Image (cartoon, rainbow, N blue to C red):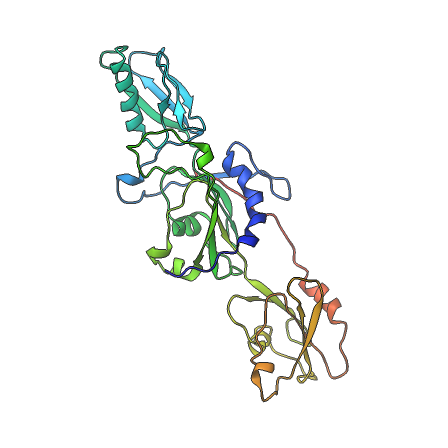
Length: 345
């Protein structure tokens, strides 16, 4: 499995933006234009095996029907510790990590063991799914906040519900585990959930192309509270005496020769021995100027010079540079729009 290195420093912005709406599903975050995040629910063929049955979690609202005993029937919201209360029973009942049938059987057992009902018949169903919120954001066609009714893997969530990556997507996909995951691996150990123990947080990076190529080793199951981010590729800007001044995505190593070809090539009267690359110095706001000679014998300083994200390539004419930065402003200023959000039903 090929994993890219995590970028812990770069995760804080999108973590802070998304965590409130994930941890507290009733809170709708708003986009930059003020519209709430719509919700979508995932409904499709479940994964193989009984292990993928939906397991109740904190904040879910469940309907409990005790046959012939309407005074005991009720709707209950699972608390933060994964428990519910039932009439005539003093103890808390562990609901989290149980399926609907398992919880119904447990409630019936408790009424029977306490000799409150001789042979109770109990039905449990999830009325409102609130315990499994995840989000997908970044360079995808349909970013959104999703409520899971079942187990789902990264590829299915990304491709079928988030619309797949856009043309500007970079080389990786990140999963930020926010520490709100509900671990149900050991459903026989019915100890109560300790919210203080659900604090782990880490980012795992996967190669996007490997994920899309159906390699199961890079197709993890999405957990409660996960935030999936597809970072955009970095861009370089080509301006001046070229056919189509524009930005280009630096998804993979890109030479200046290839970059110029992507914008239609240079126009007549280009100063090919003095192509200027303006590059920002990492960690600062100052820039350095690199002169490129396309006919240089050392091609790494000529046509094979590698561009970086953020580079501005200025292609001058023999009659002088014609306000390249003005041209950059006119052709390159991006139009930013807010990303829509959904929840998967």
